[in-house]
Length: 115
Image 1 (tube, rainbow, N blue to C red):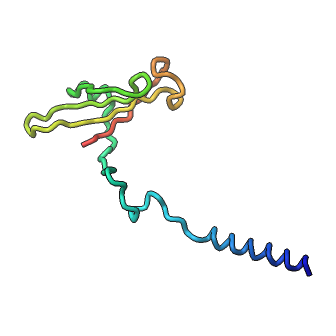
Image 2: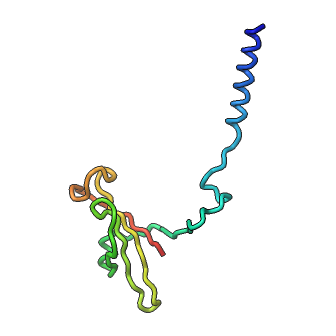
Image 3: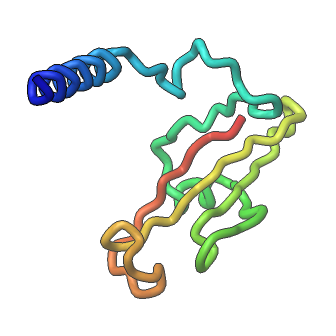
């Protein structure tokens, strides 16, 4: 009789676990979740220009951060619109940054518009 009870309890525990596992969990990135106060959307759209092309077009490096200055913030004033265009560029070394930029043979950039 005890063996039957323990087997029945095990089966019941397994079934309750299966029901719990089948219950959908809310996705933290779901649009139904309200944004955290102070967390506002950011444009951050990729652009097809490299860091060199942006510098040649008149953008100026405003600040840098990260190891070896790997993240750069560039700006270019638009005098007609009286605005400033901001871009964030990340320099990426060989092997997905496993090497220091100075030792990279083929570094690339990932630039994104901020505004």
